[in-house]
Amino acid sequence: MPKLKTNSSAKKRFALTGSGKIKRKHAFKSHILTKKTKKQKRNLTYFTTVDKVDVREVKELLRLR
Picture 1 (tube, rainbow, N blue to C red):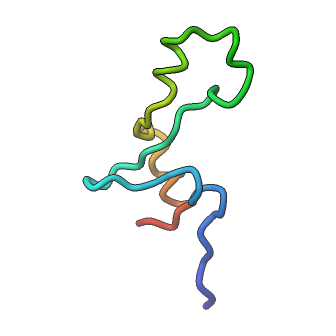
Picture 2 (tube, rainbow, N blue to C red):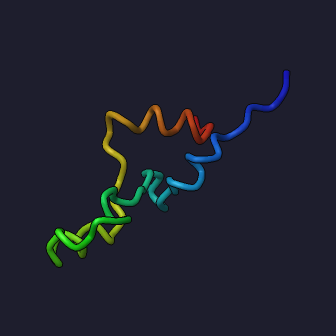
């Protein structure tokens, strides 16, 4: 049986933390920034973890078990 490939877009978007959680970037930070407040843009800069309802799906895309 051939090896399964990791989803290319997922490996660019997600990373594992040291404790095994999956981290991701926030959305809405790429364009149309003039109408967003400084506080909103600053808070979108930082990484966050993937919500627990989505962890299983992301792990399947990354081929993690």
